[in-house]
Amino acid sequence: MSHTSVPPAANALLPRSLPVQLITASGEYVPDADYAAPDDAVLTRAFAGLVEGRRINDQCNALVRQGRLAVYPSSNGQEACQIAAAMVLEESDWMFPTYRDSVAVIARGVSPEDAMVLLRGDWHSGYDPREFRVAPQATPLATQLLHAVGFAHAAKLRGEDTVVLAMCGDGATSEGDFHEAMNFAAVFGLAVVFFVQNNEFAISVPLSRQTAAPSLAHKAIGYGMPGQRVDGNDVAALIAVLGEAVTRARSGAGPTLVEAHTYRMLAHTNADDDTRYRGHEAVQAWIERDPFTRLRALLRDRGALTDELEAGFAERAEQIAAGLRTAMHAEPEVDPEALFTHVFAERPATLASQWRFLQDEIARTEAVS
Image 1 (cartoon, rainbow, N blue to C red):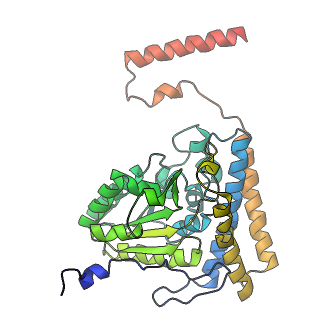
Image 2 (cartoon, rainbow, N blue to C red):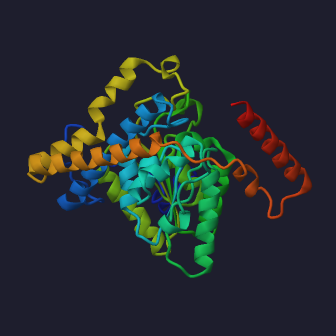
Image 3 (cartoon, rainbow, N blue to C red):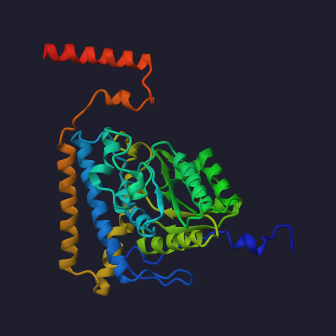
């Protein structure tokens, strides 16, 4: 064996040169030697999720413009990643999402209005993480990866078969937390699936300025875990690849890094002007790869998606949007003392003084009004 050759064991950890794809951009099925496509019933359920996810994204973008949400990091164009992430997990598994993964959080069972509490600015999280097995959405890059690995380590020590899905974007792979989480998970053989949604930009920083690796999935071999690339706009391929990684983790074989190649169709958030760093033509080119239209074309061609069924999905999505509008337009009842309630177990004199000062300010303001 030459010094430049790679041992067979290492070769097994390398991702494919091209992302796994089961449905083409035009909606045609492509057989794969390693990954079987989900059946039509699963894909139809996934399509319903895509319909709801797209409608949630559109509604939340409108709520931002109306001043009812402080910020919304849209996953428009990335809905296949969101829906597949929720579908591959068992009820006992855990999801650790990013700030852009609201649709995945909702697909996991959290109500849309509760999922939006964080982005409205009312509380840190509007849902009970233990009830839905979804960690609070994380705004700092990659911090949730360490939490996910710690949770998986605790589950292993307790003898549980819990699988943890640790979600992040391509920008998070440039953080030290990403390295620490990957290394710890691999060394201790933890049941973690690292799911990187590579949408090509970390706000305005393109992928080429973040890594010189052939792909983000290639980073996995350096930690001793397998990596795989998948078409992030192909929900069938996502379910197959993520599903295999989840099954592998549950069997005790350790973590996997899955890189989904997708695209952020809208700006980073409502505070971002994406025209400063990418052209209109680049964005338009990804419209033809829309996860919604390609799955719709496949299911229509197979006769699995009828007009009646699709209309029902659309009606359900509208009901979700209407409920979200109602909830977000309602003025929340604000308790000023809540600012001081959860800072310390026992309120110190300095904090008590600040609360008395605020009470005085409120009383004088109410007297004037």
